[in-house]
Image (spheres, rainbow, N blue to C red):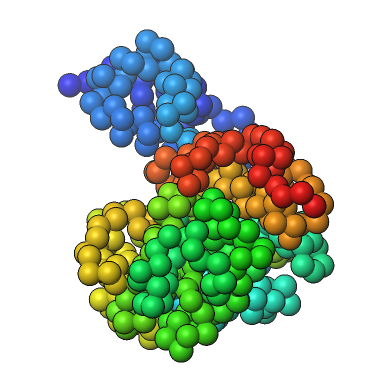
Length: 446
């Protein structure tokens, strides 16, 4: 059969017939990026409308530009084009990345385990660091390019709390929940927080979400957190030993500390952190603004890798294999059965009960503004932050929500909306749009 000739009409490099032909030459060389973009447009049209007759009919009826415009409301076509371009050279390929030996570090560990760093051309040296203060100082000193850090340290550093001001960015949240409030076995009959006056608690850092959540919990039960309890900064790896020797009565910290306390018979789980604030952020992946500005291509390469790893570990279909990987000596160095109870959410509480909490730990990477606002107002509430700040502005400055959303979307997942949402904490609603009103309702007189 002879092919019917027709007049070619080009729209965005596509002929109205749905095929690609050589456009009339104008004497100028064809831009390579435009060619790649046109190839993506053609692939999209052919993939969504594989039947040639239907595709030709559609394009003749409404035109390629209209179809692509409609697709752009559903698919990140501009992003697909950008990704398809040859990526610019990395400013540096060898990065030092610090992590804490707790289950929160799963995305950073899986970036290595799954080869996501290597796929981006990065040679990552994962460095296990025992304490939060140490990992913070190593980042400040430039020994680490990227690091795991508990919330809200990136906020306090940017606000200049506790030292010189340094702009720190939160790329992603490592995990949600994943902490427990643990007490020594001698307190099994002392479960009412109203009777906890004089207790000594370990926290990983004074300006940590654990310390702030614990204070909020004690205050909600009628105690004065400044007077009725004592707090000691203890590295996560030393929670259980401190509990066993009796130097503390309990701790609020990241897993597998709580589950290991049960496993070793040193304590029991009074409450999971998700029982206090379900969905709260624990650790974050952070980098200094100076590192980002000096190494923008390297930064984006790492950003893509950590989001990809986060999406993998957030998928519960992948959870069964995680304990074996995370428990290894170079990572958490913990009994696999202990890590398994945290990851799967089926666990012994140390009180003779087997419980199930599917959301005991989660790994959604999106950094919510609202969580940052709550943490900062708690610092102000307890006078760790001496002056009021623009809490919403600080949250937007530190939490790279829009950037994270873009990368999450590029990878085919649906990110939350970057907004100042409401949080439910200890059964009470916190409106992150109204931080000053909240402070007025809870702050003690100076």
